[in-house]
Image 1: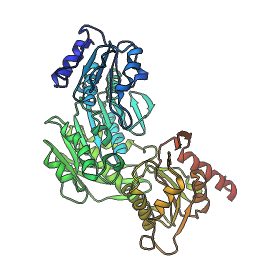
Image 2: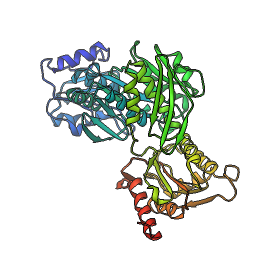
Image 3: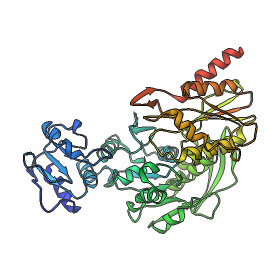
Image 4: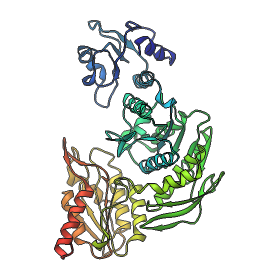
Length: 503
């Protein structure tokens, strides 16, 4: 790939400013697209992005010193820096365009299904991938829990990485024989144009509930970020939309090829009678192409929506019904999503889940309530340096739906965890308590909190450990300390068995 090819792509999108550029040699070979000056190698194009705390242009000299062949920035070149420089109107769109061009547009060589929404993205992505695999199409996954490239599983750095990483990972998928990719598309990624330049075969909207208001500031801005996925869809690509969500109707009106699904409203795709248990879900799915028969190991009403979303994508993309049914049945679960960590012999049920918003916590507790033979015990906290407004809301939900609450630390980051806990407790008032006998404990140390909840559990109780799910660390201050909710819960269960004489 030459710099001339990449420069033409920028010009074609109208991104190059009319003056202030030193474009460089068109025939020069480019070795990569970098947005972090520390990763620049000789021959890289360095794109200076504006971040929350710094402008990447400040690192242009460092990038030049590491061998960058061209600097791309929204700022004009300093006169004393001789490296070729291109000024653009939008650096984030520029890096997306450059990355897609450099990687030879991998999304045009496979079907990419983008999944956005507050809750359900991860499970829906894994369901979509499982359906494609059952149809004989190797499917990669980009999401919160992990990146799957062919047979390789890599740790996820963020739900949707920066554009050069997205395009490079998709190129690896294509090179390893993937014919599809299920991609979680976060609101941050859509706002910051990380998936611009990607050709989507379909888009899925799961729901919109309160989250990330520290970044988006209000719910309208949050929705506008989510809807960008549907703005990016080609006119013939289906948009799979949850019509039970209040924003579903608005999305239908702005989508060229909407396909709707719902449980409580008339829609293109709807379920038959639902059967729930700890063993999973069983129901029919009525579609314009006929009726599917779903048997899933996934638990709870939220997973009905996730299954409907993935099934809708399979139906709209013309996948065989038997592959859709087999794919749904094949997915045993997703790490940190209603993950059962106890054994039948424990006498109590312990579940780990990623729920970290008030709506997700409500869904989790409402799913768990009919499955608990005894009390419902909830262990949770809220992240530091994030949307503070949801803390009392999560407290209110836990108070209304739990019998015993243990409030603890999540990822406190730079905040005082005791202050976070106090803000959660503000939502747990006599009006929001399930009953006057409800217990409430505050234990800052998360390991101790999980252990205490499991120690206090009686036969038939169900303990929910919410908030961190699949995460393998806890962020305290600037440190990322090893921490795994499921492993900690299993250790506490082992001590419980030892203390009770059951091994």
